[in-house]
Length: 134
Image 1 (cartoon, rainbow, N blue to C red):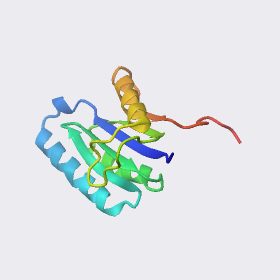
Image 2 (spheres, rainbow, N blue to C red; image 1 turned 180 degrees about the vertical axis):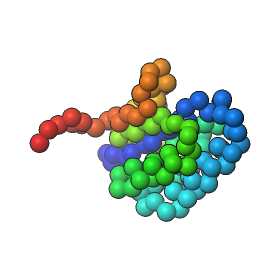
Image 3 (cartoon, one colour; image 1 turned 90 degrees about the vertical axis):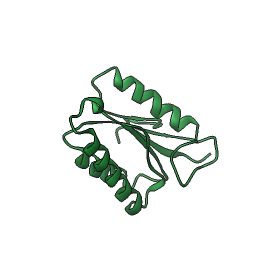
Image 4 (cartoon, helix red, strand yellow; image 1 turned 45 degrees about the horizontal axis):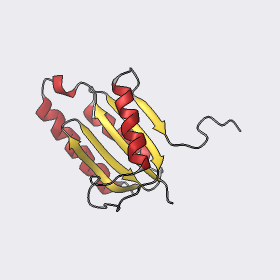
């Protein structure tokens, strides 16, 4: 079964941002830009809640540069980033990153929930040998 990269991101403390409308506008703009320029995005970065968004990537080539662009655009707000590698058991949705389910989504969502209860801001889940030394 093919492995996919699911990215779920939460903007830390977005409810208390003074100019929330400006933050949302900057977020929408950068997500549109990343979606149109990145060749790694399979299901586009999609805002799922006011302060959360997610995407499915088919490869990791542009993953970190995409996330860096997003991070820069919402600065000084901070991001909690959950990346998970795993299978997707439902139909793949190319137009939006909503309506899919499977291991990669479970791992990413569980890690994001755990991060909200800690000080962590970045987690990668689902790698077979994450700390292997060569």
